[in-house]
Length: 220
Ligand code: DX5
Ligand code: ZN
Image (cartoon, rainbow, N blue to C red; front, side, top):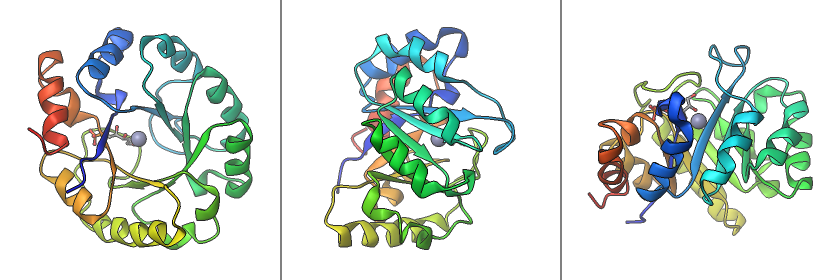
């Protein structure tokens, strides 16, 4: 079975020591660093902005996988690109014109991702898939870490995998929410190749990070 890339979500890190946490997950085998940006409007929580991404940039050379849960989103894309994001993922519902947002992200030389909420159908990708680098299937409703995996999303992962394979392009298929050592292999079997994990990476403290990441990769 494919060994997935692991993108730990900083939402479960110690926010008083974010730089150290980024270095610790880098050393523990994280492939990407997942940054959840929430605006208290598109989702009912507030997290961090581009200043924090910029401050963290010197702490790792791993790609910053920036998940924007903000609406309207366009006005912030350039700031996150300048702060050091490598992949910028947006929700189609964050508006006003998601195709234009994708064009904007790519015009800045960054990879563009589209995130599908649990109730958003895979069909939403029909007129976007040829323009994007990543699909992020949300397996929880966005806003908080530590929620339970919504099993119905496995069908969506399978559907998106088919759509991606049809393009013949190397589009990444990432899953976010409730991913742990039990649900990770289910996501990979359904076709995912990148897994976001907050709780399951950071549980147990820094001495557990390497074992937690290995377990998520199915190597534990
Ligand atoms: C939820 C975020 C996720 C979340 C994952 O809105 O997009 O990245 O932090 O957390 P866990 O892995 O704890 O479900
Ligand atoms: Zn996320």
